[in-house]
Length: 407
Image (tube, rainbow, N blue to C red; front, side, top):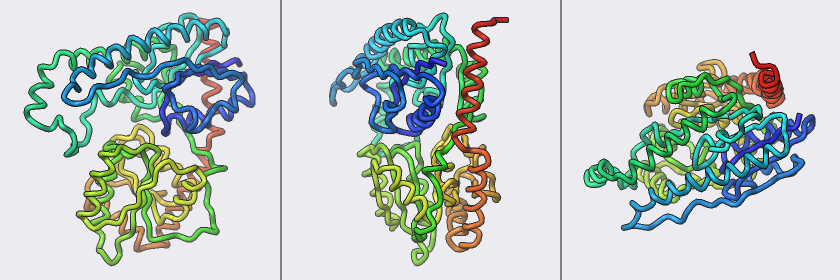
């Protein structure tokens, strides 16, 4: 097949999954990529695996500083129109290349990219890693959010420009995803969200983990350390992990290492203050290479994973692939990767309960090893990338055949 791929992804799980997919598809198919300059091309770089890689210039408009921040909604509205114009050009050039199929990944600004509207006549698949969550969910509260003030909330309610941007962004995302030929999702949890928000029936195509890279390293010894991984943002729930660790007796309390591919300075300051006030020792790492991350998984006694409504959660699989047990929250996609009491712990978002689960494994090395070994076997049997990409290829072929032979 000749497969055209489009993305405007930042660093993170979605870009990592695209890297793993492209790395395997290019061995059997011709891959051409179309992207924007605003994407992160260096993180999990796919360029070595593709025949051509076209990058089109786009950078979001410059935002105003306080006290003119309310004009930023106007800037973002224009960004949406600019993106649509660029994507229309890209769609035309993709059409000229006559691919058998277009595989579309999200846009960091639009979510579902407007490119989907302009691919008439070409079989296409959109991989929805998550809905446009910022417009459908309330973020966890933070003291640095100015929106928490009563005055700010009142102004927001009568701010027509802000309202216009939010409604336009939601409508744009809705029209775009409904233009897709087929929508894939990463979990049953995400499938249900897509159904409730967009009224679409999506197909589950699970992601995987690179078991050649993320694996046990027997020469490394375990440290009295808990690892937590993810972007340094409120949705990743690191404050919950810190508070849970603070409930462990001080003489048994482990250190916490937080590894992030992206760091929000305000969140870093907030988490540092929480840890300091509660007497929890935290090491913050940012942008570390994969080989170092694999070492951290192997050195950690366990991985604490408490993101809010995580759609899938590659972190859990990466840890399990390294035979390090995971204590996670019982929500989102984690319900489909961790089996409570079998290959890890899956508990309520309650700091006391979460702390008890952490302490149980810290105090019982035998049980911890048992969970780690079972998690490792689970990944080998079910979550390798070869299986995920094979399923993806089969569905690609089905999409092409459906277009060529309509009912």
